[in-house]
Image 1 (cartoon, rainbow, N blue to C red):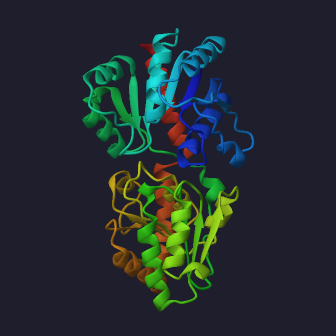
Image 2: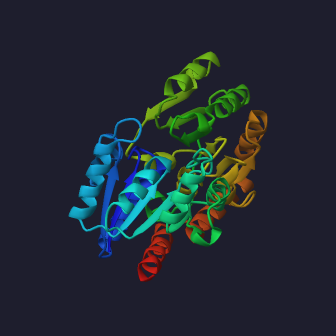
Image 3: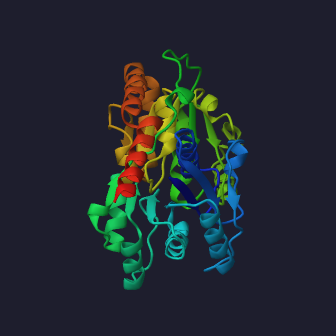
Length: 356
């Protein structure tokens, strides 16, 4: 079976990592698997040098030349299954399926607030008649798609994102020197960096030698840096940008924080648990499924920077809780979110559809 993954932008994100890992596993297992980015953004190849990505340089709106290129790729590589990722890719996948011999279309919803089209019965019917299976990276993402598009639940499933556990696994013992808080994010509005920075400013009042390490980049990076300056914490905050050595950097964190107001699941959360770093996560949609509260990680109410500060201080001072979260988090991610499990679950979806 030959599979074509279509994504709006193969950028440096958790979504791109999932697509890359899935495509790589498929190729090793005898499938044919290709990745196409509709725009000219294949930035994930900067992180993973052996990632192959073909970009189509799509223009704004419905771009006919992009559709023509997709049709050519599908015919040339004898694609039988199209796998779209995210809203931007879905309609192009549907059109390509209808104009070629590709007989199957799988769509993965990577965020619980994404892939939502304006209510339109024509679009809803098009999605229902063309998409053979919708996969949510969390139940929250899957159910959101069902509600917003009146999509039949029987044609959906949840497959949690998986990670390469051994790549991130940290040492069982950790010597802490000071308090290093870290995060990995795409600097965009939904990541709510404000809450994290406000909480960190409060932590500094108690532990003035603390550091905040921020890995990543994105459209809102200038705003993040401006806020850090306004709160007078800049000398304690390090912006590392996009990095290839994230697994090693995670192991230097004492506490990992995600303060997003929406998450499909949160790949960086899983990676941090694999690195045996205690995670503190805002209690929102898909992130609720990423950890077992109080056991493998700790939730805080989204936007409550004082509450986040209190949890950080508690973790820093309570050695027993800190060590328990490290080990239980590692056990949790190993049992539920391995790359192998994710791949096997997708493989079952592909093979079951191919038999129908």
